[in-house]
Length: 197
Image (cartoon, rainbow, N blue to C red; front, side, top):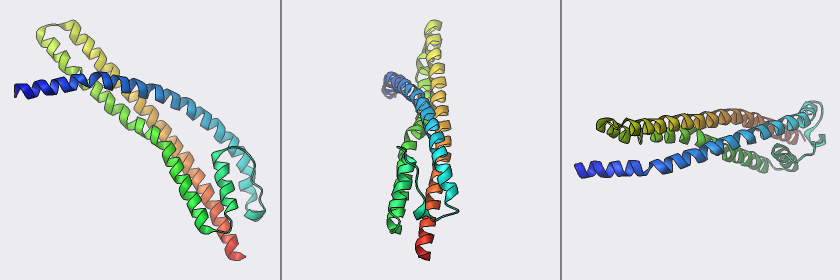
């Protein structure tokens, strides 16, 4: 039993360095994601201003007669694809499915951060607790204090990563749901117009 305990101790202490490195990488990635989020927010404001007259004009005239604003934005390209596929309902459904898949792929990074951050933070908390308790038992207070500092630091960093990931995922999910609803609305209008014709 003593050998098994020793093996488990070696494994857990051996994981400390990879856990800290991955946690620091996720922290830097979460900061980069915040910068990317700001860029996406500014882009959404610009797209919203371009799409507002287009969406408002759909109630007064045919989708086929409406002119889509130009720009290099992902959402506008999906609107353009929908308008190009006016005659085929199957192609419109495929375009909507592709949009959902692309948005799901874009959400995966922040979703993973929201889950991995707290997990690695907890691992980084528990791993140094063993050496800290050993230091306490042997009277080495300096070693115990150092291990406890690492334990608490990794918890905080893990929770920050998780909070950033969770917040960005929630906001982006709302954005994508709104975009999908707009695309679905245009696709339904095209279908309605095709049935009338």
